[in-house]
Image (cartoon, rainbow, N blue to C red; front, side):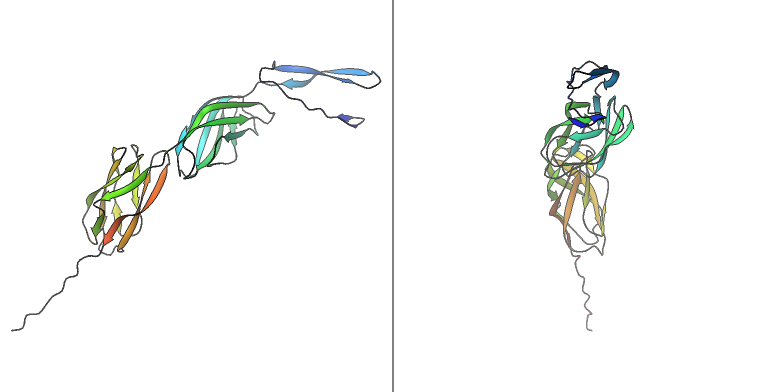
Length: 238
């Protein structure tokens, strides 16, 4: 496209197998006048993408930095991840082999593999199929015992549910509970020691399970704090 006597514009697309290196640019006027600028345009090698860390995050996972490793990254490169339910923040350029990007996973994100794409500032692009995955969130369905009274000493509570992994943690909402370290039993059972303070608020509590890939969910009313028994003293009449 003619702009003025010193400027032209032209659309250029570069095939993925184009030969890398300098190219000559030739301009030919309508009167046949022509000239060639040697090496005025360059085809650069595309970036490569070799690994992603972490390579998976669970449904409901809070924002975490994901590192992209490869070669040929440029300042201004952009990372994108396919599919729904992901919030991918601005890409940070570390060096030609490392990029980082903040990723948040919604609780409703579709579970499964995702494709990662890196696009350099010069348009060079690379994709890695199944480079990232969204995993199922853990879900607590019941607790046993499902309730403890105010002032109850420490006791082991078993959480039953689905999609638990080694390293999962349990928390229980509200004040007045001391919740110890979680023990992984299997993919459907976790245990946790719980003590109840004498002044703990009475009522139902929510149980949250968080896997070590960040996947998390909260189930309301799984555990309850009961009121302590009330002691009454009667005076004997003599």
